[in-house]
Image (cartoon, rainbow, N blue to C red):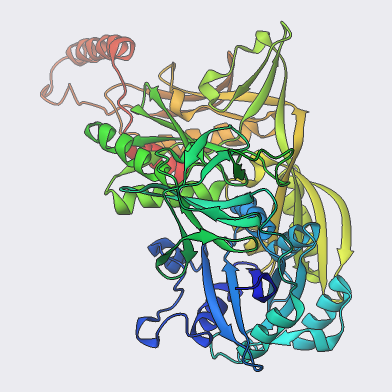
Length: 597
């Protein structure tokens, strides 16, 4: 097909604004999927995606459409994830397109993630088609949302489309806008091959399946190709296009989107964002925007039953086959035994991996408190990265500790600004500036330490704004902070799995909270158990578990009091000896209670 009849586009939207539903209607309207095979969220394969109503793994699909002039067009929809944790995947999907459908909920208006993805699209010079969705539901504000879009994009009212993806209203206008407004790809089949890898997945029998957009040249079966980032060479075993099922072709031409199979066995070798070129025709520079996906959140995964260690190891290996951004390495803990230190793109990524391990592989897991990677500058001039509190050097060896900061955006109705600024202050956030989107909505630009927002911040934000505020962030840089390591001691023995790096001002609050929780859940012993929080050798909080009293004088009826005193003194000596030699077994439930709060 002529390159002039190809349209490559994506849909960008905030979570739950109807992106997957609109994709379903486009597939129905173009008759890409027969009605008998149609189901909700057809591009969302995982049970978790359907349950949470979010897209976790991006997808691509080709549709054929006959226009009113009876001309056939190829429409390549490159679906994108809808959460900040997967921003890099979104950026690569956007880079593979010439246009984007900006989908906005008529009842909620522009949200933080919408804005973030819109800026990504504008950086890539994509043609933006604004669409107001969910016009069929009550309590909508179409004119207000239109005003927001016009101020943001500088477009006229006639350029804004109105749809109900659920009912199929306005879908024909969306497709005509895709054909009429989005430009065809720019490229020539005679130039050297340049193809962008925008996604990849792993097949047990075929190896790595690479999803590509051809920017110039052509890609045929049996071609020899090379990866720009690592210079690895592969032979192309198969090429094809992405429909509901993969369709094999003899070649992919400039402007087209499809898949290739090379026989590569490791997902790490095929990097999302990399450029493919022909081995015989090297290129001077790659397509722009490639970077290595960076783990931002770290946590320990330990099996509840120690016998499940090998099962957990195998399960993580299987998940990594289809998710190269997951990092894990073995670690051991005195309290929790053997497990793995895992790195994730964000807190949602961690939750998804943990839920998949529990559901798909029937594992019971204890996850340690999620934390970030700190840059520790030592007194000898050396710099090291620490993602596990137990690996932090002694205080005397540390010159300073730097933590990652993020630029955050909060969009909220104006009446909740005060509440959100109070929460931000508690979480060490600094307000940079404010922008009013309209009379009732405001955009707050803030800087936060990343460690302050990975744990329950989103829940606090929603509570303070009655669910109306939306939040998005991007990595900024490392900055020095007054950070300390808080250790938890049980009967003067440090419990490594409960250590945490926190800001100096919050150390007492956190230490007191953990001590109180442990006091309630650790069973009483025959001797007194001290639970302490400490910074170095300084104790900052303490709770005591009172001993179980054994009535040794119960059998002494009447008689001289001295007999009872002798028995009580003997008991006192025994408890003193037991306190020195006795070992407190911390139940696994104690860790679950501490980490789940």
